[in-house]
Length: 154
Image 1 (cartoon, rainbow, N blue to C red):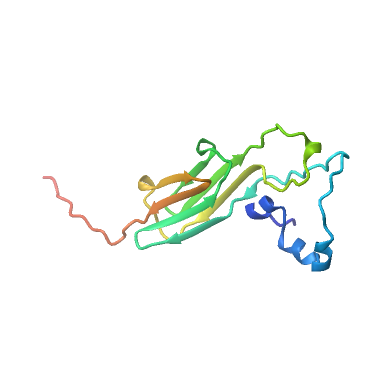
Image 2 (spheres, one colour; image 1 turned 180 degrees about the vertical axis):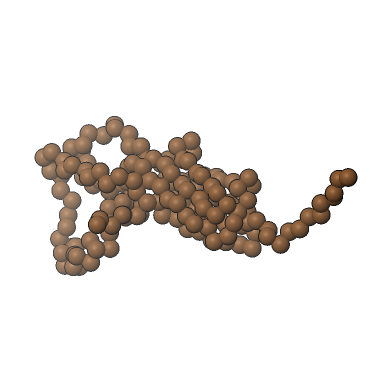
């Protein structure tokens, strides 16, 4: 069964196994080439897994993800009380001829990530912003100790 590559692995074009396979000596001998031969076909591996940072404060859970190159309207964020899903697509502009590439390491295509939250959140009060390619989602926690008095109508 093939291991699903993380967004970072697809973004950088490397995996831990690949890094272990090369010695330092071999790495020094790798140089870029400018071959005018037909470029290798890029394997379509489907949807990448978005890498995230998540932390919590006493009042909220914050999720951060790098989404550089993705317009805010191309992001889809779904939230339930105990889970958040982020989906998007980074679209490559077709302005550059394939044969012109010396390096081609950036990830283009669909990505997603579903995260189980460590506490229940107030879905209606959640906010998301994107600034300089960093998506930040603020998820206020539900106060389970909060009480209210109900008046009985008669």
